[in-house]
Length: 297
Image: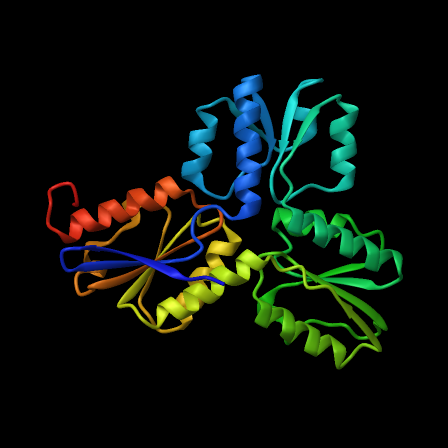
């Protein structure tokens, strides 16, 4: 279960939502990527290895090369599969190139793919709660042989399932449990048979709960994470809908003096792709700015 820790500088109190920094899946993936970079010098990543621009820049400086398709890499090259995973078809293509595959797929994503494939084999129309353009959802979708419907959380009350008898439900790992429950309730009332696998990551739920609790006890909350990060976006939505002033930034350049002026107790929360070093750097910048030191603004 999430908790919090604090840092006080002068009249400013920073309260950190826990957990923060990389989640288990991302930490595991980045560790394997860094080990491969040290060993091989050049590693090809299928898509951005992590949804955090600052961390990507750091990895690029170590020899990472980002590609979009397997055909862009040389025969026998080393390729990194990010935590979001890839389809079985893409994995076969990589092996056909004699690639050394560094598989950083998060175990929770692998579970979602396996459950979707199982439901498909057993004759269910697979329904995925998530963003259809997200690489994780694409990987889950392609693991199913039969019909698949992706339901965006914003369409929980408007999607069509008429004529569907057997519906199997899984979720993108970063979705909210409340949205999954709403989808299950809606489908169960209209389909003759519904089977559900909760594939939401425990760490995701913990972060979301921590942010919800923190938002009610601070003057404002800062969400740190890439603007292309789905799980960071969920944290922002939770904090923002609570009514607490919320600022979403990728790095310290996103801090706003005007936003900070009347706040003495500020909550800090970070997405699962936000590195510890970046959180620390932003906290230091906040403390220096509020104390009036020249290295603030």
